[in-house]
Amino acid sequence: MSREIMLNYYRPSGVAPIFGVIMTLFMGVAGGSLLAVVYAFVNHHDPLLYLNVLLVCGFAFSLGWIVSRGIHKFHIRNVPVAAVTGGLVFVAAYAVHWLVYVATVIVDWETNSPYDVTMILQVALAFLQDPQELPEVIQALNREGVWSMRTSSPMAVRGVLLSVLWLAEALVLCYYAVKKPMEEAGKPYSERCDKWMDAQDLPTPAAFIEDVEGFKNALERNDYSALTTPPSPAVDVGGDNVKYATVVLYPDPFDPCLSVRNVSVQAKKKKRETSTKNVVQYLKISPTVARNISLALGGSATPPGAYKGLL
Image 1 (tube, rainbow, N blue to C red):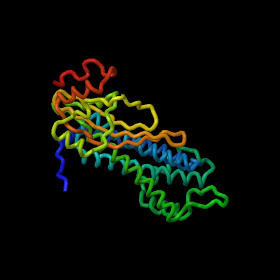
Image 2 (cartoon, rainbow, N blue to C red):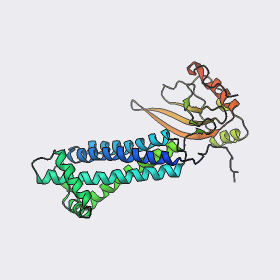
Image 3 (spheres, rainbow, N blue to C red):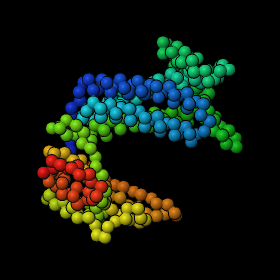
């Protein structure tokens, strides 16, 4: 039985300024609600299924991005708080989406002005004032179906199938709205300098880490030779069928850290398929080690003075 490898990884401090959390929520709800209005309107009138999938992904990514910007701007380093904030923004945006979506469908079906945005907003506000009717209307839409699959025999999408699609949509939106802020809050932050550490991708690749456990054992012994000795001959990162490791350094005068990722490139049927896998992420190192790795893998692309103070 192998022993547990004890490495010192960066951990967020858990700081979550109340004002910052409130402002992030405000930004997220305001921006998410505006996006939800646009998404609901376009989603109903979109005639292409593939475009609809792109719309869902775009809306989901945008929700996560808005909350992440607030997390970054207001220096929130608490992952659970970031997750809850993203979840609340998702709930608000998704509720607005349903209000506008149902209103859009009703206006489209019952009037000769399917693109009358003013009328759609009026109907949505009416549902907001009396939200008890909204679940019943949604159930009716589910029974009737709101769109059909264009095949040789057009089939209305409704009932269980439509419910599954709606559920999948909600899960995708919630996933990105929560995951992206969590990732942002977990990024390396310099508590002594009171700022986020800037990620610096070192331009020279390191040798592919074949033995991950052995590599981690070496790091535990403070042996960083795998990262301070570039592979010979040099790896052509633009070539086919190559394997190498990339290093991202988070320089800080006091508590720098780094991430290492294995990259494998294979040429298949005139295509280049690239797969990546994290070896270590946000590993805390000493300023001296950070400087040595920077000098070894920085190359000519490393700006003068970029690691000043890492001594």
